[in-house]
Image (cartoon, rainbow, N blue to C red; front, side, top):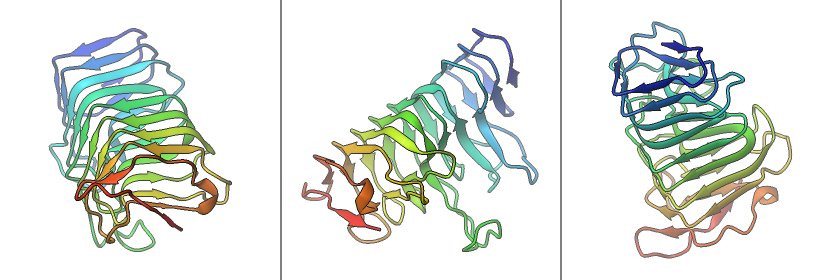
Length: 234
């Protein structure tokens, strides 16, 4: 389904394919998006890559019928998401670009493949949220769990990151639950606060970040015991 008409509202549908948003002011609500067999082509159940504005998706399930290392959940920029349930994909949310508000959602049960020859270490790098760069990005009031690589992976592969906020979530899984990599572009402008952390693959590794990107990140605690989460230097 390719949406090219501004102001389109999609609701109460069972979509057995992929959705591509190419218009502004599009809304998807109360639907389920299942994808299809991607063969060997990288796909997102919902793709919002273009010059659109104000795409909104809410109260919607993203769960592919065909499990595949080539399928992610929602990818793009300039969107607001509320009440999503995303599972059965490699990366649940991939952000590259500005103006994303993602909240009140559940990201879980990511797929992990090994061997997977497209990565240097021969395994998929599955994340709940992967932020490749951009400005004005918020991930809040959500439950992130079940990814192998990281619950939140912040890099600057696409662009410098600024005004990124990771707040008020329950976060677990990954090797280190939150992993920040500057990729040689300088400090990432990120705030991480009021999150509760569960277990990660590496013991007590809630946040891994370069010293140059670490700011005042208050009130992040472990679910077990309530002690503060300390940042590990990468």
